[in-house]
Every structure is written in structure tokens, then in C-alpha cells.
Length: 472
Image (cartoon, rainbow, N blue to C red; front, side):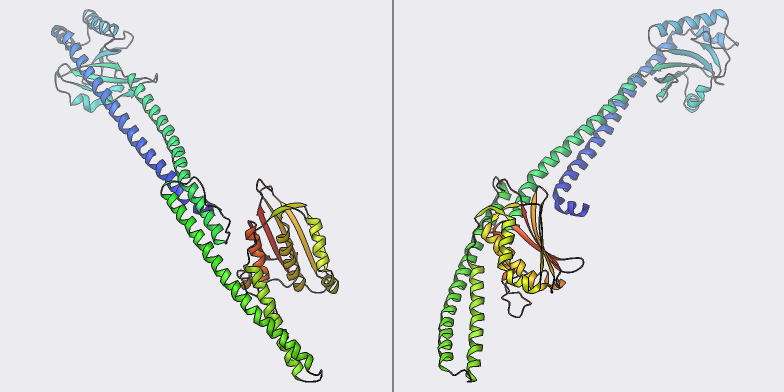
């Protein structure tokens, strides 16, 4: 089933997938590039800001107080001095946390008075390499990290001298906005992808819809439906193709009609001398005595002439126009008429006729349907044995209705199923090979389909299927 869908919608699916793939690719690339560009731009700005802050803080520190740090733990005066600098900058929003640490990563002075001095600070180990590589009076920044509170932070480090470093933590909350901006990009990308798929579907449908109409039109032409109409409202290159197909149909109809006229004329020309031969043979037969052997020869001549006349009549019936005149038909009444037609044959074979008419009335040409069912019943009666069974069923699913003629006869050889409706194909000794061909033609003229299949047990089933339209 999936393979069938893919085959029927091959180009539509390809267009949609191509549109979707290109859009997804563009959105992904643009989202990544835009996110990285904005993130890098913000980080560069933040890094420059951190370096500026580090130099600003370092310039606020008096060299004399730095010298005091080398004598050991800071005295209260030294601690208050540094604390005042740290508090002032934190209040001004320059940094959120400031401290001085030594080359062993021990805290010397911290902006938070509750932090113990000479305490080892493990957080600095993450940036050990950056800190060790710092030159005196130079600064560096860390990569953004999320804190325990879920916010983004950036660390700045400044080397005061060989032993002491200045560290401060700067808020990078705007980085979260950048992350949110990336999510918004993905939502936009998803929206554009869906929009592209919808647009691709619309474009693909606008291309494949007229093509599907042309395919259906070509099928009708292939079936020989001369009343099939060219699809309307098809423009552009496909419209040119549609016009070409319409011209082809007209040429085929003209050629077919011309050929049928010629063949019908030939048939008439053959039937006229056959009538003369038949008349002369009958007159000759009357002049001969009954015991004369020549009478048998004359009878054979008459038999062959009769066969030729039957064949020509069947061909003329097949070749002449059969324009339908549809109307409502009562299937029960039609079945009774057919039973009367085959009353003698049914009695001879003691055949059993069954009917299951879920659909009582159908819209079809009455004469055509009667001729179709008479041919199908004739085939079934010839196929079944003594006390055989023939059944007629009708049903609908709301979109189509179908009539089935089924029997329990010998069935049809598999190799003949594909050619059984071909004109002049027959397996009967005295058959013309036009009965089922006429049935097929009448169905086509009524925009219906006639199919045949062998039953699972024995016999075969002919099924006439027609789409239900507004008229019917």
C-alpha cells in the first residue's frame, strides 16, 4: 500500500521533501550561525568589560597596602581598606563578588566578611592554567558558567604581583537571553519548516492535480471512451500537453469512426452477395430430390453462409455507435425479463437462479444493461453443468455500485482472463468472439467497468462497477 502511495504521489512527495529539507537545512545553519555570532559578540563585549573592571579595581589599590599583605594575614586596618574598596564597587554594580588570593589559591581578603581567610578556594582550580599563565598587571577571563543559583557568571582575574591575584565575579545573565534567543530561533525554524511544507504541498498539488486529471483523461481515451472530456482550467505547459491530448483524442475518434465506416461498408458489401448465395442455394435445394447426395452439400453451404451472416451481423452490432440513454432501472423487473429470455435453457439444465439485490434501482442505459446481462447469463448457462447455479448480486458502498453475475461452472483458464474481452477471441466452436467484447464496449460507453475473476472454489464471476455521480 505504501509503495502504491509513493508511486502515485512520487513528484508531490519529492517536492515536499526537497522544500522541507532545504528549509530545515537553512534554518539550522542560520540558527547556529546567528546564535554563535550573537553569543561571541556578547562574550567579547563582556570580556572587554571584565578586563576594564579588573584594571579599574587594580588602580584603586594602594601599593602600600599590598606590601602589608606580604607580612602575613591582613591586620584589621588593611582588611577594612580592601573591604571598603570591594563594597564600593559591588554597590556600584561593577562586580558581585571580589577577593584577593595567593598563588596557593588561599583567600586573603574577601568582599564577604563571613568567608574565612586563609581558606583554600577549590573553585579556582578550574582556571588554574589561566591563572598560572597570567603575567603581572595582566588580566584574563573565564568561560561562562552556571552557578548553583542557575544564573550565568564570568570570572575575571588580575595578577597584582608574583604572589597575589585579584578575582571578581561578574554577572552574565544576558547570556541566558542569548540562550533564550536561540530557542526562539528554533521555534521560528520549526514554524518556517511547517510553513514550507504546507507551501510545498500546495505547489506540488497545483502541479500534480492537473497531471492526475490528464492521467484520468488518458485512461478514458485508452478505454475508447469517445465522450471523455478534456480537463478544464489547466494552464501553462501542462495546458499545452492537455490540448495536445485533446487533439490526439479527436484524431483517434475520427480515425476510429472512419475505420468503422469502412469496415461496416465492407461487411454490408459481403452480406449482399451472401444473401444471393443463400437464395440460390435454397432454390437449388428445392429442385433436388431429398435422396440426392447433393442436398447435403447444399445444406453445408447454407450452414456456412448462415454462420457468416451471423458473424457479420455481430460485427455490425459491435461497430455501430451505441450512445447511452441512461435512466433508472428496476433490477428485479430486469431479472424477470432475463429469466423469460432463458426460460427454455434454464429448464433443460435444471439451473438454479439466485438473487441478492441490496441495491434495487440503478442509473444506467436500460437496453445496454439488458444486453450485457443477457450475454453474461448466456455464458454462465453454457458453462454450468446440470443443476448448476447462477447468482445475481447488487450492492453499493456509497461511492460505487456493482452488479455481479456468478456461476459454479468450469471457470476461465488463467491465460484467457486477460484477452477474454478482445474482439473475435473465443474458445467456442461456433462462437463469434464478439459477445463479451460488446459487453465491454457498452460498459465503457456508460462509464462503467466490467471485470472477470475465477471463484476460489469453482466457476467465475463477472462484475460490472460504476461510480455514483450527482445524476445517479
